[in-house]
Image 1 (cartoon, helix red, strand yellow):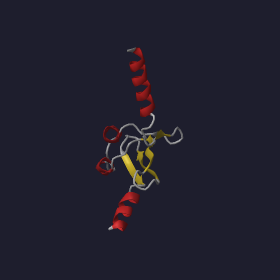
Image 2 (cartoon, one colour):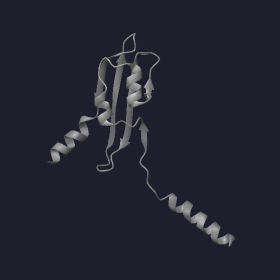
Image 3 (tube, helix red, strand yellow):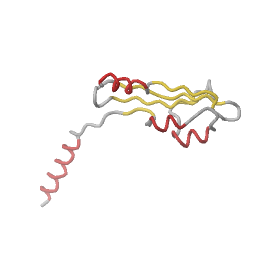
Image 4 (tube, one colour):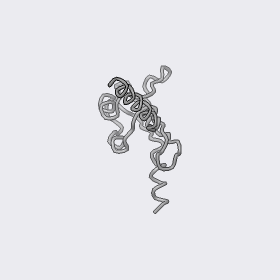
Length: 112
């Protein structure tokens, strides 16, 4: 009985190593949520919508960067995209810079 349990456990471990999980670094950014944030929103509102920023610089304490990097399953290309939010002294967004979100949209338009 013990050999069967041992064999089953070993087989499960070996097969679990065959699963491919793409590496995703940084925040998981949803394009719909990215479009919800706007200038004038508080830092609390933005962090509630997007989560904790991946990067916060000591040199730029009023700037927060949400960044993600992953391999596109369809094309195999490395996708890098993010949002950089600049806050004023009252912790309200004064500037929002989005980058990398247009790439997939333009790729789909070119296919049609």
